[in-house]
Image 1 (cartoon, rainbow, N blue to C red):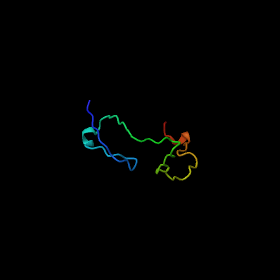
Image 2: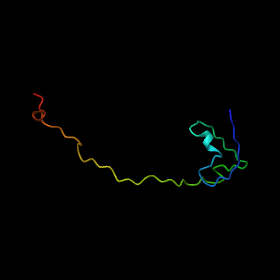
Image 3: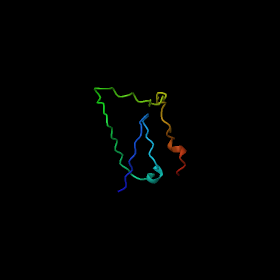
Image 4: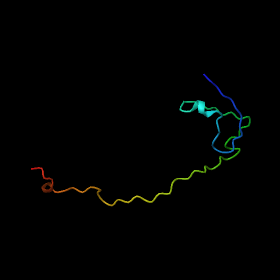
Length: 76
């Protein structure tokens, strides 16, 4: 087992891992420790900056492929 310990200030939802190249394409376990922790009752969680994509409503316009009469199949 190999461990790397470092300290950083969290200013966004991303944390830069030093020398991450040595961990690329590997499964790692990340543990976050904080000396001061505020519970949800002390401070509300910040709203996520991510928003759902704006997409047009879906409408049904009929069958994509219509059936063809058996006489048009040329199976004789």
